[in-house]
Image 1 (cartoon, helix red, strand yellow):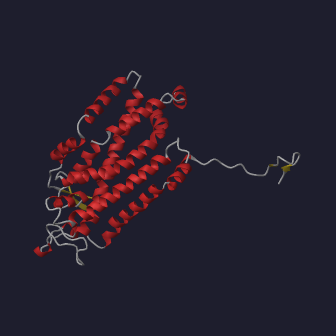
Image 2: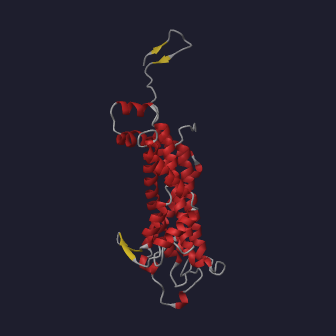
Image 3: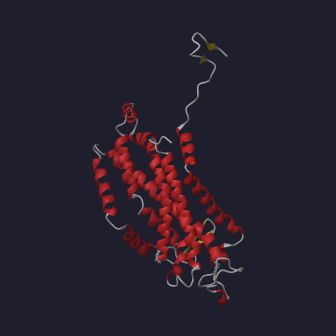
Length: 321
């Protein structure tokens, strides 16, 4: 190891390797795991996933969805036989919360995937066409967004649900027999949840399209499609990821209150929301019908919001933590 000792006060170690800078991904992961509430959210969400997956080893879906033929099983309070009690037709609430959780999470993830894809695409196209000969596209898209945002979200959801989610038909999806209203609710939530993200992405694109790397790509002859998806979109990932994460929690709540109001997924398919629905009229007498699904909804949404807060802080380029 060679050292420079000309001046004893300044010793330079020439053999010491230069420390490599951490990648943005590594920095984001480190920030995320320093966020205590985000880590707590991960543990909560892991517990929920274990509950709705491991539970299927003990109960079948047909058992969860099939009414009991014994009338004395109706509205049974929690006991050794029925840990979380039974509903109005004798179905085990524990089994229904397991399979209902799968459907609720599936609806949330699928609908938010639709909303995020639609909002991102519209935001990219709208922002990129501003100031070009295609600026009329931005004008039309933004007027549509403003018109949809002017409607109260709940009213819009109820109107669409009333129109599309009143079917008693069933479908076979990935080997499971589900109410056709599952697809209707996915479409309703997905098609009403993209407007806010489209405006966020549009504002980012308006800033990014004037940056040097985009101007250079355009000068080198890159097509508009390539500029949008190869240069601009990667720089919009952080807010999109955060919006997607927080949107999943919102979608779970949306499905729950639509089902609670009687406009959600129809029987026999269970969701946390429609398990709550039967307790609406007798909330004091049949407390076990709302306690279990209500607790699971609260814990899941809380966990997802904690994770979303952690991702927001981890992906913030201005953060110094």
